[in-house]
Image (cartoon, rainbow, N blue to C red; front, side, top):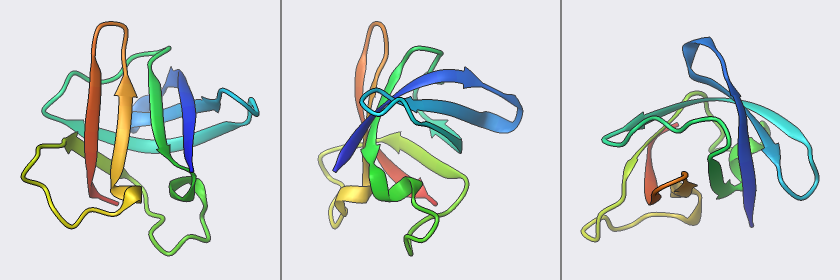
Length: 97
C-alpha cells in the first residue's frame, strides 16, 4: 500500500522528516535523488509503507531514487515512488537501499 507523505523538514545529510497525510504519523528517512531537482518542503512522496518498516527485509538507509523510464524492467512495487512537487510530478525508481 502506498503512503502519501508530506515533506515537513529537510535536515543535514538529506534527512527528510515526513508526515503521513492520513494518520499524521511522522517518519525520518535519509533520501537521495538523482537526475531531478531535490524535493522541497511541502512536496509529497508516495511510497510503499514497507520502506518505512525496519523489520522489512528490503529496509535500508539511505534510499536513493532516480527517474523511472519505460525501459526499466523487473521492478517490484517497493521500487517505485511518486513525487509531487508544486510544478511537476515524477515517477521514480529506487536504485539503492
